[in-house]
Length: 332
Image (cartoon, rainbow, N blue to C red; front, side, top):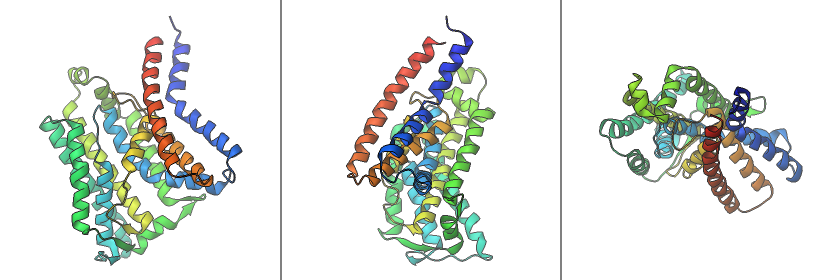
């Protein structure tokens, strides 16, 4: 029989394990990797985690709800490409001008969110309304949305984004780019939503046991539908930020980000079984991956080392997920 204090201690350690891992990794890299312990390097780690991190928020919400969304990478690429086409003046950009000029920022952001939300709505319609398998539906979306990006761009790029958008990518606050602060704000806002609002608590309950949630009066289908729309819209935001970072868009923009986002979600403590996971842990997972990638670059090691370590971390995270479930059952 375990005491309430023992159970609380175990829960705290399990919920924050990834933060302990991040702290240990940063200390080790600071000691053994030349030139790692610098404010500029830490700022780069935070900035590099921006785009995968934002994408991982929506992915995590869907997984916590008990489903899967493999389309987020392609949705981000589509939002970035549409932003580039509309608001770039080189390549395939049509240089849509607005008056006053600052309207470019909210209008482009709104378009990206709508583009992502529409794809998320389609995913939700097929999965929730037509009862199709989420893995297959979102895999298909991953393919056809990327094909749509290639079709509307004809394989070409959009360059030289409108100045009001470029400013967001250039400006810094406390040595950290504004883009990264937007990502941090997203994590703060959605962490609050998932932990402190009925929507977040109900999503978690649905992921843990959808039947029990339904019997408790929770509108299961509606909330799962919303989770897909939300994941698509958040992926659209990630694409908007990517377009700002690159001052445009290319047909292959964001390729491979899905796997990093998925790895960050798993490493961050979100259970693939659904119903377990917190967004601050996901952010720690993103920072951990970014720190490892930065250290490998500083040491001049081949990029293949990043993939090797990433794969091992994902396997370790899945194993840890199983162990944490057993530990929670022991302290229950």
